[in-house]
Structure formats: structure tokens, C-alpha cells
Length: 246
Length: 301
Ligand SMILES: Nc1ncnc2c1ncn2[C@@H]1O[C@H](COP(=O)(O)OP(=O)(O)OP(=O)(O)O)[C@@H](O)[C@H]1O
Ligand SMILES: [Mg+2]
Image 1 (tube, rainbow over the protein chains, first blue to last red):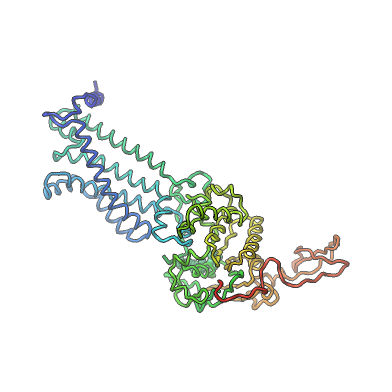
Image 2 (cartoon, chains in turn yellow, red; image 1 turned 60 degrees about the horizontal axis):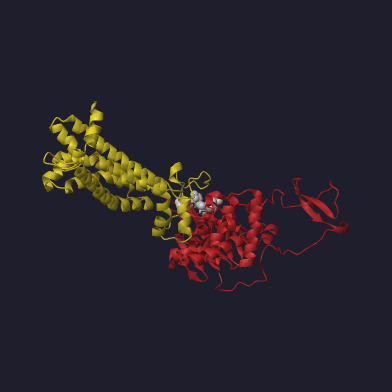
């Protein structure tokens, strides 16, 4: 049997799903992996969501955001994690901080790129009929940009779910545990199984979010009969607008 | 009544779009700003609902300085129709029309009922209510835009080249509808166009603008046609090319009581009825416009 097949067989063996004296079971590892993912994604959304919408709506601080995002992307994940663990001790906080730092740039980019891609005339019209800035955001910009906003979330979630495995380098439970333990014990089947589990989880999450992304697409646009070209999907550059009062 | 007093608008980049503009826009009439591209028409119009704030000068509606009115409230009280309809693509026609009503917390059922009535008002089939804007023709979208502008029953309706993007036949239709609506609903309409024929057709008052929104001439279509104030105006209205100076055609025999009229270029311009070889005369009181016999009262704009 090749390594890949052996890895699958390892995963399907019920005894590997429960935690024993020998090590973590898949069940517990999966739960903690998902826990770290969920908490990190949530915090990322809470921080980067409003920030990205603000930047996208006002066009302010865009360059600062791009600069900060690039800097965050350049940070060595493992190095940052080690530093935080030395600083804060072992626990869930250091990996969550690292994951949030990792998740913010794609989410932020999705949010402001999503809003910027909208037809300026539509926004202008919404303002002209008497919507407040917040109403424009909530009733026009967010619904129309929803697919791109979700796209940012999807990218962030994918980054995070795949990187959680790294926490296991420092003994924290996750699907990465099997990779790290497998390596230490020279158990390459276990290691392969761990890799398969991480990849499968990432694909599954991405697939679910892809479906959600389709569902949130605004009705009325992207039907081929669209004369306004207001969706972000057709990638039209926004036209200049003649207004200056907010 | 809307009054501009020495209004200047200089954009952040230094463009002086409007320079010392002063004019009075009477209530319950149609005033048309007409001029070539970039002369500041849109800027003038958008200063009325504070989509643009003047750099200098004062704009008053019924004697109240609009600078003191909160922009959102002001915009909700003024209808605005734009060239590209500006409809929200993700909302059905009925919700687009009801937008302002829903913003001002009119109950949904009531707002929708009103939106359906407005479909009738602008001559659209109620069956279109549940369509999305992308599923309408350009002309239908413009009608929906007009219906939305009328939804909150505003006294003032701003229209910025609303029929610029539709074909000539549909445009003629929409112009006729605008005239009808103005007559029936008695709104103060401020209309922007670069088409002088449209300006003369719709306007009780026409304001011809040059660059920087400098007034070249202001008056009724009759006054302007009869007495162009300058060469610029003469050229703008086509008088210099003889487009407006008509003579009876010598070649084409009259059919019935009609005789053919040609312009100075020799092109057929229309027919005129001449029973028994005599030209009929009439007074200049176009049925299309609600003019003169209505007095403009303070406080009704
Ligand atoms: N937001 C803006 N920032 C800078 N300049 C502007 C802005 N809006 C308009 N302008 C400039 O102000 C001048 C008047 O513009 P405006 O849109 O009022 O003209 P217009 O008469 O409506 O033209 P058109 O017939 O082409 O619509 C133009 O030179 C234009 O380039
Ligand atoms: Mg304009």
C-alpha cells in the first residue's frame, strides 16, 4: 500500500479517533482545530470587517491599509508565534493572535476592493435620494459587494484553517498534531494522515464558503440583462463622479 | 421659489464650475438650464439639493437658506432624476420607487401602494413592479426614475439630462409625459439639457449658459427666439444658420390647406395651414406649458 492509501486507512481506523495515552485522537484534535479557526476568523471579522468597510466607503486611509497589510503578510508566521509564546506562555492566545494577523489582510482587501468596484453612479444616486452614509453602506454597498466581501472572508478563513496546524509545533492540539508527532516518531503514515486531514478540512471550509458566496449574490444583477454593470464581478472601473458633499 | 444669489462653486482641484451665478427659479414652472458640455449645469442643479455645496453665495428655497437645512432631509424633500436613472440594481422597481418613502418610515404596504400608483402616473404597466431595473429598457428605467423622484410628493423636481440616453422616439414620448406631469402635478421643475429644442419645448423659463455658468440669456422661449441677446445665443439656438427662419416653399405645391415651410438652408422644416391661401395666425400660448395665468406665490416652491 502506498503512503497516501495508508494515510487514508489510518484516518478511517476508529481507534485513531479517540484520545489515548499514546496521543491525541482525531476527534479532539479536530474540535480544537475548529475552535481555534472559529475564534480567529471571528476576531478577524470583528476587526477587519468594519475597518475595510470604512476604508471602502470613504476611500480614506486606503494607502495606510495597503501598507499595513503588506507588512503583516511579510511577517514570518512561525517566528511571530514563537515570540508570542515566549512572551505569553503556551496557550490558545498566541496562535489566535498570529492567525488574526494573518487573516486581516485578505479580509480588509476584499472589503475595500469590493466597495470600490461598485458603480459610483449608483452610490451617488442613493445619496441623492436622501440616504444617510450608513444607509448607503447597509442598503446599497454591502448587498451589492456581498460576493466580494465573502471572497475576502473566504481567503482569510482558508489562510487561518491551514495555518492552525502550525500551533502544534508548540504542543497545542490541532490536526497538525499528527504531522508533528508523526515526524517526531518517524511515523510517516500518521504524518500523511495529518496532512490529508488538514487539506480536507481546508477544502471543505472553502467549498462551504464558495456556496455561501453564490447565495449572497444580489438579485437583479449578474443576470446577463444587467444594463447598469454595477456588480463587482464584471470588473468595470468605477467612473468619476461629480459630487463633493457628503 | 428657488433663488441663487452670487453663487460660486470652485472644486477642490481649482475648477471654477460656477461663477457668481444669480437667478430666480419661479415656483410651479419649468426652468431649463441649457448650455454645452462642462458649462456647469449639473453643478448648478446639484447645489439645489446640496449634493454640492457652493464655495460662495447663497441658495434659498422659499426664502430659507438651504445651507441651514440638513442635507439628508433636504434631499428627501426634493425629487432628483438623473441621466442613467440611478436606480438601485438589486432592488425591484417597486422598491426603487418606494425608496424615499421607506427611508422616511412610511409603512411598507402604504409605500408600495403609492409606488404602484406612481407606475400609472408615469405611464408604466403595474406588471413591471416586480422586475429588477436591469430587466427594463432604457426608456422604462427613466420612467421609473421619474416615478422615484415623485414618490415623496416633493414640490421640487430636479432633472439632469434625464432623456439623454434614450432614442429620439422614446425621448419625444418622455418629453410629452414630463409636460403632462408638470401640468397635472404642478411641480417646480428644474431641468438640465444641452439640447436647445428640448429646452424650448419644456421650459417656461430657459436659461442659456456659457462656461462657468455665466448667463447668456434668460427668458421664455418666445422671448429668446424673437430676440437673441448675443451672437452666442443666436448661434446656440441655430438662428444664425437660418434654422429658425422659415419661408414658404416655392416648389412643393400645397396639399389640402397645408403649405410646406423650409429653413434658410432649404431644408423642409414643417408645414403650416393656409386655408384659402392665407396663413393662419395664432397667439403664442403653448398648450404644453402652464404659463402666465398662474401667479407664483411665496412659500409654494
Ligand atoms: N467633482 C468635481 N471635481 C472637479 N471638477 C469638477 C467636478 N465636477 C465637475 N467638475 C468640472 O466643473 C465643470 C462643470 O461641470 P458640470 O458637470 O457642472 O458641467 P455640465 O454643464 O453638467 O456638463 P455636461 O453637459 O457634460 O454634463 C467642468 O469643467 C467639470 O470638469
Ligand atoms: Mg451634467
